[in-house]
Length: 122
Image 1: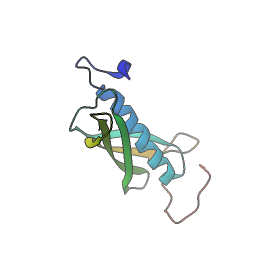
Image 2: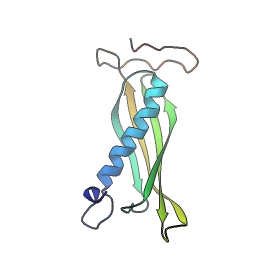
Image 3: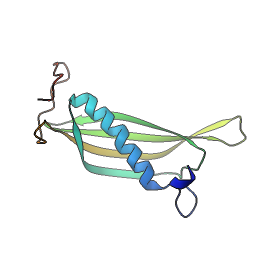
């Protein structure tokens, strides 16, 4: 949307980063089966700008699981409709973020093994 643009008229990088954090946290939450918090944005690479009118898609995957942490890679694509009919799909941003699983006491808790059911955030 136009309100999300920078002075050059492209989508503001901060907006892209906030959406990257949301996408990454969904994947981390599913893996941890509990609340997670963002502890680091390890790397971000803006390859190309995102323009007003682009359809933006965020793809996240777990890259690594530690004792209490989960590292997630997020790749961002923009679909551009240049002539109104034909779309061009462009990789615009990549990021790596680290999340930590936390319990009800807001302290780090171990990430359970993938094959063990742990529906409660105890």
